[in-house]
Image (cartoon, rainbow, N blue to C red; front, side, top):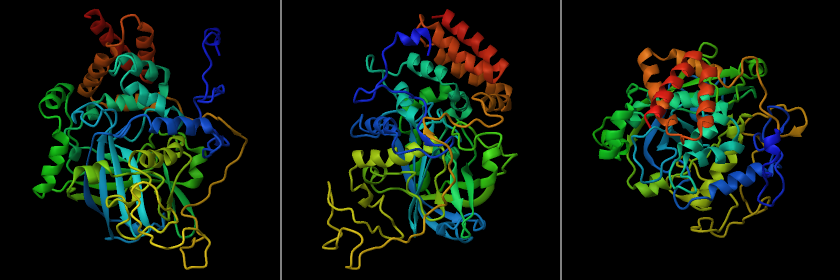
Length: 492
């Protein structure tokens, strides 16, 4: 704590207790899973989920379609998931695309990550894979998610998104540098939803029949090719046709031009995780393909439009806590928070019986629970007993966990994520910048400079801090950005 910090008021919980650490979720040892006793995490996420009604707080603007996932490779050495059990096996799916920051009535063609939320209707229950069209994210710990999204949403005083808030947070959060380099590059504004990749983003666990487990990352590579919009093209399209992405997806399926994606996974043996050069559970990092080459495992095709957008797109719910046997979570601290936050958001926004809606309930099996009543309960259980154990023929547990347990060590506490040999907040952002062509770099610099230059004239400290993050990623990156921002601010 600096001398200046000592003069500032103390951050507290809703009950007024002082907050010791607002940066790191409490975990079971360094790098371990999150603990339910971290009530600051749950207080922040639960409050955040209830801040807006009735639309989603994030990912409000969305489009969706039904489709089919087909297995194309044998992955049984890695997972016992039934829907992945044999080549040629098909599973019904529902995919919802979305922008993150905009409201329900916002335009499609904007610079924003695209949500890529996929529901598999498997015979073992629904499996939800909740990701984006980028392989990384802005932050690595869920305890910072409400703070991050507040900077992207409307300022409580001005009612508008403010460049001061955005760049103040990003400048003070150097871990965001990698994702910001993705977002302000050419892929920041897809031309259509069909022409963008999807990623599971998080690291997940696969477990095989022998009980061995592996860490995996999912990639959905568009078969239509990557196509993007420049900032200038997007500005025109957003103003003239705000529904451009939704319309394109719907019309392509209507005419039988079914979009598809090649599904790949990166697979890491469990033993590699401890010594890998990057923390494999850090959502701000990728696993370089040279280390773990992507393996094709299937095809995803979208081939049926929803009949009613509200009933099937807006009321659809996705949660990364919806696993099936053979697939489970990792110690990724963002994923750990989302296991709670997504399901809780849906219970609040759609209702406690949201899973009973046609788009959300299992299609290849049936749900058998002892949960009853609540808003819009349809009485489906009749007079069946609502407790377990019972002697009236009610459903019973399998006693076989869905995924493998993982060892944890160390004392509980609000630990920072473990640092691996090549971990830094800047190395992968610099690598990404150097992969760009000269034309791509020029557009990236222009996009970033145009936004940073909007910071208030009396807050040069915010500008300098933001630019310094990019300078640490790559000297040329920072130098060019600094010059571009300086020139734009002179003109104001």
